[in-house]
Length: 361
Ligand SMILES: *Cc1c(COP(=O)(O)O)cnc(C)c1O
Image (cartoon, rainbow, N blue to C red; front, side, top):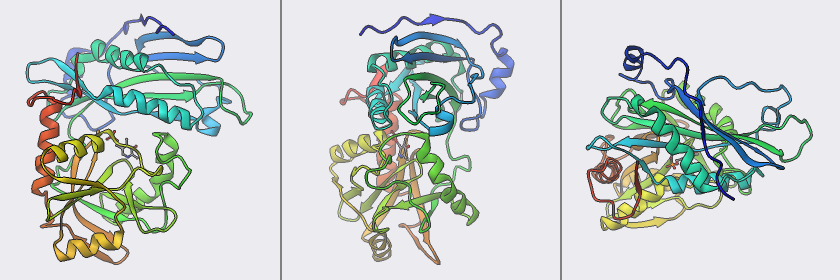
């Protein structure tokens, strides 16, 4: 099918220049939004239609809108970067478009043509590029999402969907600028089970993970680590980041995509960069007890988490119940730093992009 053309409805009163400058000077992640949003509607009889770039504003929902009851909702997260020459670029947007549809299939939602997803993302960056934050590590964080908009309380896949893209200027994700995070292993809760929705980027996964994350914070840690649901033995991921483990023999491990782990695009990129840097990369289950034993013996030298929002985050300390162990010297490690630099240099256009990951706008 051909993509519908985007109608443009400019904001009647965009934020004043001085107010915007203050808002983007030091933005807290996810609190500041640009003037516009993209909106596209789907219905079974009309397909995708009514594509608009329009003023960002509240949605009006009937109380019987399906998403409010049965949580058919998925999202993506990606960043538009500013390159050193002043132009803007996207990183692996095709991968986000493909993953969005994988999530849609799992949640029995309508699929969005990938070119339409990519065009929607480009449209919001084009209209609100002047919202780019003038801070080191800054980006325009883009949040495409889709919810079941049919007004119906029957339990079935909806026949109407609403796709939107909003944009948020962001600085560095971890405000404290802490060199390494402290993780807390959840024994009470799991994030995803075999056959469940763990590999789909759906809001429900986050809803299920929040109580464990709150426990981690209450106990003085930064993030929660989830174990597998069946054996409570294998490390899966954090609430919103994938995990990597670095060993003293030049190898790294990341848990395999068995269906309960979200297939991160940062994870995938880092595996490629690590291989090309001469490291041996294995997608292999890694047990929580082994993690502690290897950290204590020195065989494991570094661990890090990764995702679009925070990029690469070194792990300094892990706590499970009453026991804690330190990773390496407790600060950022060399391999972690090298991989992060290589990734960021490609994202920012400072290094060659032999993989074709960057789309210049
Ligand atoms: C989005 C997400 C990630 C990271 O994926 P990226 O594509 O690297 O941003 C990891 N885990 C979960 C649960 C996620 O939702």
